[in-house]
Image 1 (cartoon, helix red, strand yellow):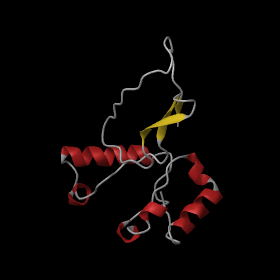
Image 2 (spheres, helix red, strand yellow):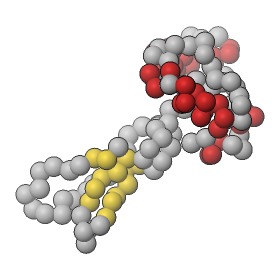
Image 3 (cartoon, one colour):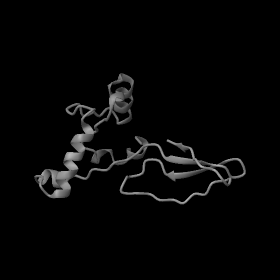
Length: 125
């Protein structure tokens, strides 16, 4: 994902990491170096970031926040793509979502099982 934002790095105001893995020094160093030595936002607890994001998004959608909040654009992305392992001539993987998609709603895709009486599929995340 860092490679994809190289061109637009000047428009990035803050980088906020989420979750417990952000406490690992190598993760922090990798992110900092990948973002051309920009500092990472440390003012929000990584375990509480999602709750803060939900509160900001609620303020934006309800129109209750101040002007600064109303001008924000929050985008959720999921770095890895999601795929279904499909058997087609013994070697097909059908991607359900691409890498780094912006999450804006639901995705529906009809898939058929390779064998009759197949009752399960394996989702690779």
